[in-house]
Amino acid sequence: MTGRLANKRAIFTGAVANIGLAAAQMFIEEGAEVFIGDINADAGAKAVAQLGPRAHFHQVDLTSEPQIAEFIAEGARTLGGVDILCQNAGLQGAGPTENFSAELWDRIYAINIRAQFLCAKYAIPHIRAQGNGGAIVNMSSNAGRRGGAGLAAYSSSKGAVIAFTNALALELAKDNIRVNAICPGWVDTKFNAAAIANLGGTEAQQQAIALHVPLGRQATPEEIAPLFVYLASDESTFMTGQSVLIDGGAHN
Ligand SMILES: NC(=O)c1ccc[n+]([C@@H]2O[C@H](COP(=O)([O-])OP(=O)(O)OC[C@H]3O[C@@H](n4cnc5c(N)ncnc54)[C@H](O)[C@@H]3O)[C@@H](O)[C@H]2O)c1
Image 1 (cartoon, rainbow, N blue to C red):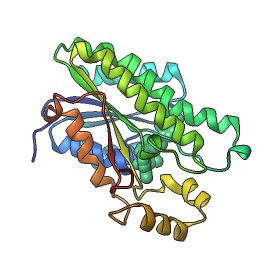
Image 2: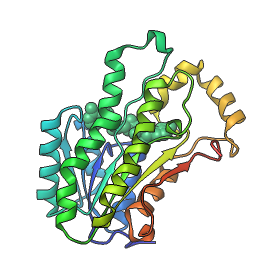
Image 3: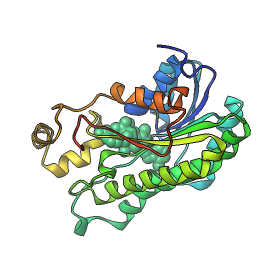
Image 4: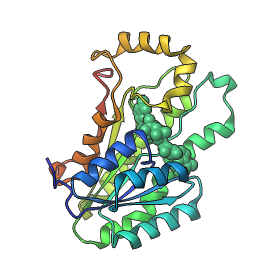
């Protein structure tokens, strides 16, 4: 299928590799133009080279409010308006709570939830201004629905994304701006290095997957991307405030 996002202008965070890059690729295939913000400039340059002329990259540290304000303003200028905001950037950290540093806790919260608030804060006026509704898609995790052992900071920050999504959906419904979240389970990317080490290594991870994931495997990034497209497109015009599990049946 193509054209489901024809002429849509999307601002993306964290879309230079893995899940976000797969989603940005699919957005472009479906007709969108994307403006990507990430802290990793090398990966950003490679991503736009791969994605082609309808992709733009802007280096941004999402822990900085001034940088976020500039990123969203530059995105709106470059795209000529904003229809969609996809918030995919995230940070993981794992380990026993009694050893966990407050600095890492704060950084996880800054990237996983505070940045989602700030990007939404600066993007909403642009989305509303185009007068035709719009969509915000926030990345959460199935760990935000039921926490993982050794993942208190990550799980609770992703749980906050779910409540934030629900509250923002209620606030923006009058403008026909829909807000939904995605809750993947294990996706095969390097992002999970801390969680895998905390479990005891890749063999322990495989055992956990065999025990807890009915479909018996991890997802690929390409299996998560279509949910971004669905939630951002006119295929989901009566859907808002939802946090959709996509985890091989792990959390039923
Ligand atoms: N991989 C999984 O199993 C899994 C499962 C559930 C949810 N998720 C979520 O999916 C999203 C993408 O994960 P991924 O596996 O594709 O990993 P990834 O590492 O490719 O994506 C995270 C991105 O966030 C960016 N980022 C981190 N800190 C930043 C900062 N301060 N400023 C700007 N950008 C910053 C990184 O550079 C990276 O590009 C994350 O939000 C993650 O929590 C992943």
